[in-house]
Amino acid sequence: MSRRTPHSRDQHRPAPARNPSCPCGLGETYERCCGRFHRGESTAPTAEALMRSRYCAFVRLDEAYLLRTWHPRSRPAGLDLDPAMRWTGLEILGATEGTVFHDTGTVTFRASYAGGSLWERSRFERVGGVWVYVEAEPGGAVG
Ligand SMILES: [Zn+2]
Image (cartoon, rainbow, N blue to C red; front, side):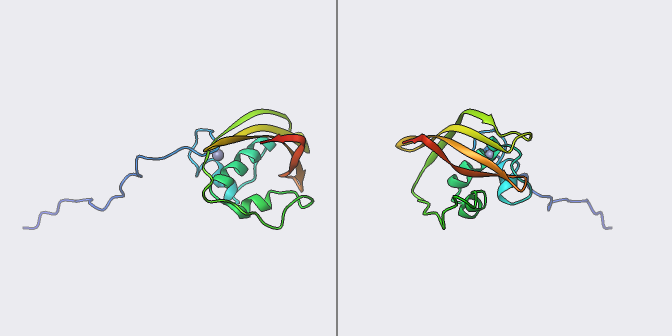
């Protein structure tokens, strides 16, 4: 007599409970938030979304993403990201334009790290339909 009980032992375990939200602070998981932009599955729809994804790229030392979302006019040849830098949070303080209806925009933010914070008003432009970072506004970067 062979009584086979369907032992479904090999069903997938649920993902680990620890599912931290994206470093950019929006509350979604990284995969569903900035991860989509970093992986190239979609592009940031607004200047603010791009700003968040770039902050997130700094956190994750994603130099390639930072360079490809930099305006060709102002893009550095490379970045010297410091793995010891501990980013602790991003606060968007304001934004002008930069929506789906605009081609330029600014985002003012404070990025905090262990030991200090950085305040900047950044300029963004749309190049070929895609938002890119241009530069900090003159006088708009205060350490
Ligand atoms: Zn994010």
